[in-house]
Image (tube, rainbow, N blue to C red; front, side, top):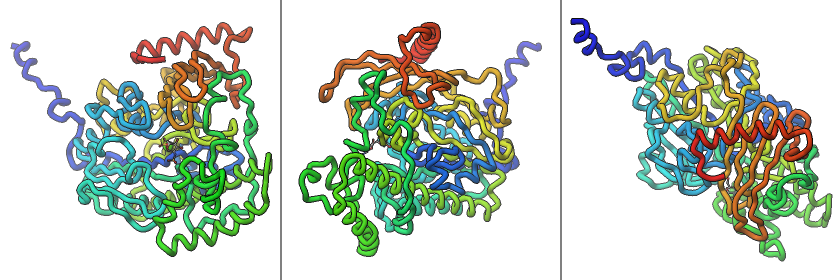
Length: 530
Ligand code: SGN
Ligand code: CA
């Protein structure tokens, strides 16, 4: 009775849901290292070729690109830390995983890829900035910072510390690398591992490591073309933001002028005690080194009494110097991690990914911070080195997004992607050729308003060439108006996104097409506000 027999045939996938399990297969499953910095702009990685990165080079990160693949069109879904980290862990858009804004939100019933890797026999770890408002889920090991974490002598929580954060002496970038190496060193060597190396740097307020206090001191960094943007032709959101170097960036906290802390008007600045607090946390030796380096430069600045454009330029230069000094330490420590992997013979069977939780403004449009769907913050650096599948020196312009990480890591481990996950595996791109069916557009959605930096809610889509953004919602702070406004950019002719073409003659057809694509995303993804 054939019918009966066929009923008792158990699909192999039930017996062995991950498609492997034996020791031999363990050997072939790759290790995964996901290095993610916080607020690292693509403009400051030399492999991307931006003028800033020609002065402040990143040889170790570039090495990953030279030996792997550089993604020139990698994006986030919601340009902010916790939402971005939730996209990473779940492979879902913000409204699907619950993490829309910076604070609470994550829906912990959603599957984190770390859980599936652990179940499948991977040794899993996360070190550094976790930031999500839930415990690290699905990891054998964690050593995570308190909230945003501190640059100097940060506190870490581990399974062993039983929920307590324990302060450690040192500089965050170095400590995170050290703990990452410790995890690899002490792992069960019969199993593959997956490690998230999540740096604190170069997050605001960009405090460098002592050995680099004077790096780039005599350099004049070039300002971006859009530094003096007047926001004309764009929706009011570009004007009403609160993230300019000119007005928002603070002298004490951001620009390290501790000497101004008790003087008017600076003592009224936002977070004017933040730098003092960070300095109080330093050891006497660290503090002395800090003061020896910053005090003379600060006094020179204060005595010079700069104003107008000279003052603005000084702010920009100090911002860039401190930011790029933080990057220099990141690059060194990426190098240290690579050296360790090399020494251990782990370079061939490990996929190394370098990315950031989002991009950042290096003065473009006059800004720092992120949040907007404009290129500098929507885009994020992405480099993948995996010699088994990725040819050295490959570059791709395929549209990829941070919801693709989870599916990629699962597929590399031979695990079937849960049906609920929205992202797709990047493995299809590893050959260097973009498959015919690859996505032609991306969906973006930012929700964190009202909030610090006052960026209005918006969603939108981006194709290879065009971008449509829709700003919406009630005005809730200051003199903000209710907003319902569109922007359309032709990225080929206007890469700086200065000319809003929405409603302009000659652009009716493309506007309609993009609007239809955006409507389609909203419907398909069941987006509930826009
Ligand atoms: C902090 C920063 C903000 C930043 C958010 C989000 N202020 O609030 O400037 O936009 O984090 O950053 S700070 O005084 O604490 O530095 S994110 O990277 O976590 O998304
Ligand atoms: Ca960030």
